Length: 64
Image (tube, rainbow, N blue to C red; front, side, top):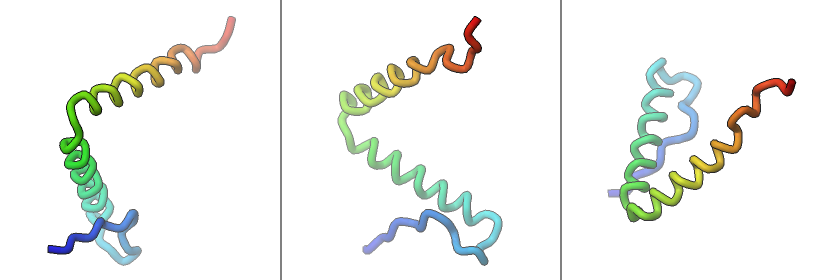
């Protein structure tokens, strides 16, 4: 069965739920891709993201 990835944006004449449907399809595809990777890979990516985001701590606070 040949499956196509959904377009990034629904056509202009699509109904109001079209954007949700596209977003949901993309979310499910990403979850499937992550599920195929090893736990170590996913854990390493999570740790790297956490370290990156922690570098923003206090970035929005004004300096005294």
